[in-house]
Length: 300
Image (cartoon, rainbow, N blue to C red; front, side, top):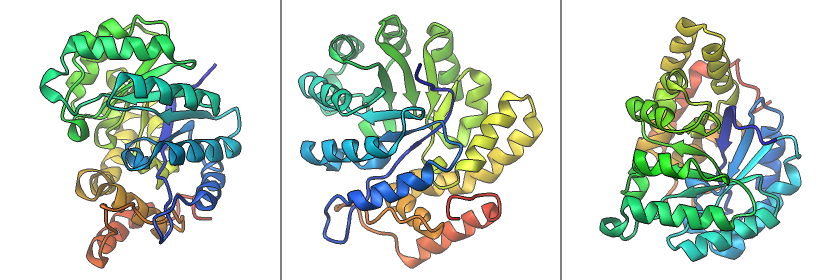
């Protein structure tokens, strides 16, 4: 049974200085992430720069990662594409390569035409065809569209749709999604800034970019919240906020890769048109990371 409770890290895709996918860096990084208490990993999500990879590169990344990640750790692959046909094909390939589940972002290029009905038709067709369970993925800041709560409620009844990642920071929406879906439907928070309150609202866990940099702190936050130790959980949530903001809306993927390098974890370069951070930004990240020194072992 696939475990979605806890903290999963959406991993960056390493590229070398020649803009080639660096599978050696990926395997090395995964070996070290496996030494952390993370529930599992998401390959080729938004932080995996999935939109910047071609299909051949994507398959090589999935195959290399699956060879390292053991069966006991949840292994999810991002397979969202703009067309339903391409999404189905990506889900099928990911399943063949060993994905436990697929994370399917909302298509958003033709924003005005992507109605609630279009979403339901798209995800139903994908879930009907996917050999492995499907997770819906709403990330309005990137796609420009929002998966409506009523569409999620309808899709949650599909036997092959296991849950959803909600990357917005609106806790009221998290609560609405929990209320509108069956208990077996796993809602995962994607915003580290509201992870604690999302858990209180009914999320079963999170897929958090910051968890690839400070995994122990993120897992600790989950455990404190579940244990009812809310004062300690809130304090740790506040400690995570500055770093989470820098890795999210401020610097994004280049910030994530720079932060990983600062903790001794080489995830390579961002793929153009994304550009590496300058020294001022790196100094900001170092300051935000300073409060976690001594409690993280990812760089050990």
